[in-house]
Image (cartoon, rainbow, N blue to C red; front, side, top):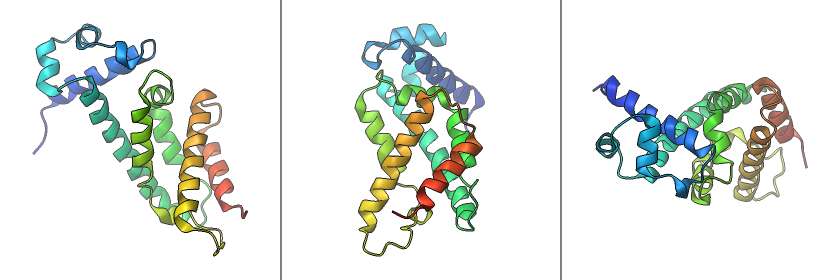
Length: 181
């Protein structure tokens, strides 16, 4: 069953208003009233969709993380055949959602959201990250290391104002993980 387009538009408007406010305000300083004024909706409209601002942010964050996971699943097919540009769509997704990622990696949000991001990121298919033939490596530990490194690369890319293209980021990231230690 399709969701009403008006509902989707209202929810997107509320999230976009929250992201705008988070560019200059700390999360804890944003009230439902302030958000509704920015979004130009009534408080009752907000509460028809969300229980609080945490609910709003988390709901949309999970949606963005699902999109990211989908991009990684597509990338997996390309990377397994040695394609160095396989992660381009992943980095394009990040660039397309840069306002969200800028906020995520800023000091405006509670750290619980970066932890939630890390948990979702851990769902990246493990097959994408090979052990480079190092049989003595602990697979779980190596996977955690690679995920943490990738999150660091994304954070750096955000902080550098996306100076490299998604294609350059893909090629560099694949190169990093294809190197043997």
